[in-house]
Structure formats: C-alpha cells, structure tokens
Image (cartoon, rainbow, N blue to C red; front, side):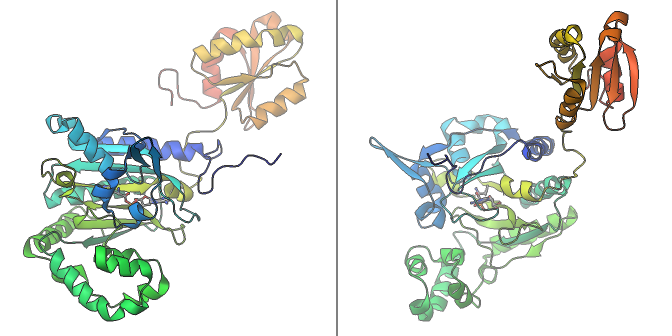
Length: 427
Ligand code: HAM
C-alpha cells in the first residue's frame, strides 16, 4: 500500500510550529482589538458569482486560481480571499445598523490554485481586517499603521511598506487608454494572457509573471501621472497622515494589486527572510465594492496578511511564545506510590497546572527520562518514604534544584520552583 499524503500545496501545521501560529493569531486579536476591531467568521464556501463580481472575472485569482465546485445546480467556490465575503455578510445581515461591524477582522484558510513554493500554498491562511464606512484618508493611514504595529510586535525584520494610489472610476479610463496606446505596438510579443487582458481589463497586465512581458512593461505609463484631483488629494493626505504617525513608506508607482475592487490607496508590506514570496500583507481601499455587490455605496478599506508567511519568519526566540512542555511530571517509585499518581494528577490539574505521568510503573530512571522528553519544568517524586511522611520531592529539571515539600503545599511550591505565574493569573 502506498502511504497516504497531503494534497499538493496544502500543509499540516504540526505541534512543533503551533506556538508561532497561536502567537500570531492571539497577537492579532489583541492589537486589532485596541483599534476597535471585532471578529467575523464567514463560510469557506461562497457562490462563484460573489468573486466573479467582487474580485473580477478577468483577474488571475478568479480566472485561473479559484477552486470551483458544481453540485446540483449550484456553482460554488472555495473562497480565494475574504473581502468580498465580509462585504456580502455585511449586506446580508444589515450590519449598517450594528456599529460593531464598522471594523471587522477574520482569521482563516483561503484557497488558490497557484504553483506551490516556499511561502506560496494552495490552502493558505490569512488574517485580515475590513473597515466599512470610513472615507477619510486618516482611516487609510491608521489601518496601515495598525498593520505595522502588529508586524513589528511579532519582530518581523526588514519591513517595507509599499504605497500607491490606483485612482478611481474618474481617472482610470484615461490611464487605461494611455496603457493601451503603449501596449498596442507590443502586443505581438506579449503572452496570450496579456493579449486577453488587453481586451478585457488592461490593468491586469501588471499581474503578468512572464519575464519578457514584465520587461516590455517596464516603461509603461504609471497611474500616478494620471490621477484626478480628488484622488491626488486623497493620496497626498494619506501620505501626510502616515508621516504624522511616524510611519515610513516607499512609493510604489507600479503597484496595482491582483484584485479589481481597489480604488485610490493600495499597499503591500514585504518582510525580510522570505525570498521571492516576500509580501506578508496586501490591501487598499475598495469604495465601489459594496455597490457592485448590490448594496449601498459605502466606502471600505482593509488588508490581509499571509499567516503562513508570517510564521516562516517569526523568530524562534520571540519572548512571547508560550513555553513548551508540561508544568509537572509525576514520578512514582514503588507500586503503592505509583498507584497514587492518577488521583494526584487530577488534583494538580484542578489547581490549573499541566501534568503528565507514566501509566506504566517503570524504573525511576525511565520515568525521569520521559519527564525530560516532555520538557516538564518540574518533576514530582513520590516514594515509600514520602508516602509515609505525607510529603514529596520537587525537582526543577533545568538546574536540578530540589526540595521536599508537604503534600498540602505541592501546587504552590511547584509554581515557585517552575517559575510559573501564581494561581489565578495563568497564561
Ligand atoms: P492578496 O494580496 O491577494 O489580498 O493577499 C493578501 C496576502 O495573503 C498576501 O500578501 C500574502 O501574504 C497572502 N497570500 C496570498 N496568496 C497566498 C498564497 N497562495 N500562499 C500564501 N500566502 C498567500 C487579498 O486577499 C485581499 N482580500 C486583501 C484585502 C483585504 N484588501 C482589502 N481588504
């Protein structure tokens, strides 16, 4: 029999890595909470139409990468992103009446049929935020500042914020025209996808990954030279709001992002140590999206971060990673002492300590080796002498320091020896 294997482009998140995932997720809840964001959880399955309309039929994400399923007369997709679903949920539940829904965040898997490589998966995970109803440039700046606040607290290094404005329905038509004029003589050398993009949605040529096409695009006009006064003003105001918050950025005139809903502000953050897939975050403003999905014309903006990428570069020695291993490992020497361990373990768990012990009464040395392997902070030794005196020996495994303590004080003494927080303020 061949051994069962995971689907290409998917990944198991194993016990050895889970502390980083938990830190990244918990930190998002904490930091985003400080900015007034509340969590939302939407389904993984959505109607195909939602993404065709919301993200854009001509985008690579919808056209080439979306997992589409047909069941009966339904056509559904595994969500490739979560902005369109959150806006859908906002409309469907009339969340305009719920002030909590002005600022929402989500954590969860997304699916794109891309060529897998380091930092690029077919099932990946995003932490994202969506702000509904805020049109002021100060809001753009605050959302970006929050993203950097979060990434910095995770100690990611070489963070760079790339900022652009992609204009809006007023100024984009003229830019599209300028781009078409530039591309027309070059069409014969462009790939088939770019020729399709030229006809359907010319801005998407900037998504092209073909090296020769990228070269042909190097001297293409940039949207920044074609912004209408309102978009130019907004962009300038976002930049000065960022400066006022002390957030450094790099102008990225060719940043257009791979989703059609963006207007005005678009940004990405790259981090060091990731190689070619170095964008840990992408986002921007999407003022027309809600109307496209059949709702009122409310503005919106947000970003999503690749959690898989964040975890790849989160330092192993981050001081806020949960400690590994159990608090206590119980060792029983002799049948009678060993027979007491089950009950003792339950009592200590009742005092909020994490406890393990061996069900089989093995030799002292074997039990101590297991305590080490489980990275117990403290071993509790119980033998005949201790049973007789109603005490036990606690041994700190990092340095071998040990003390004999009365049974009644075991939990408190174990906390002290293991340098654990006092009962009542557990991790
Ligand atoms: P996106 O740029 O397509 O934007 O994705 C955001 C982030 O998700 C990327 O910067 C990257 O870190 C991560 N990511 C994307 N694809 C993959 C993949 N195949 N493997 C691993 N990580 C990946 C969006 O999805 C928008 N919905 C963001 C947004 C929210 N805009 C406004 N609100």
